[in-house]
Image (cartoon, rainbow, N blue to C red; front, side, top):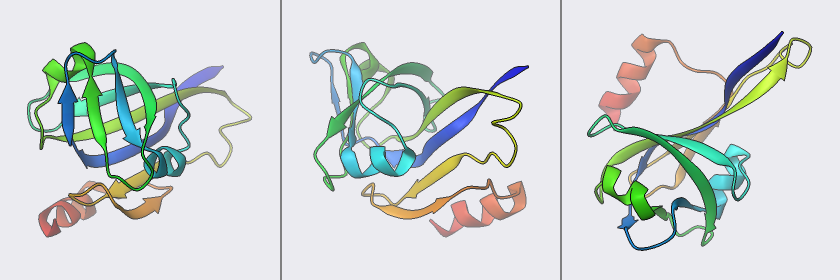
Length: 134
């Protein structure tokens, strides 16, 4: 059986720009792309923490260490500068590939600098403490 699983996510990234008249996509700092194991033009799902919007687009490489998270084209209407978003990526695996599988979870600060990379989602009680500390 094939299963679609969370491959990676960039958690609580801050939108730095929304460029309505640019071709659709999301521009992501190259350092964040690499940390999450994403490549250019790979499909990503965007979950806007501030307004609840959820949509998909594709990733393009932004300047390394710039902290850029820019929604482009029609996707720019789904966010506002300063919104917190989750950038998620999924992949399909067979049962053998799932043995020991863990997603890559990239955590960032308010300037989209990496604060941690984990392979395990914390229990809800721990996540609440982390969110409160931000």
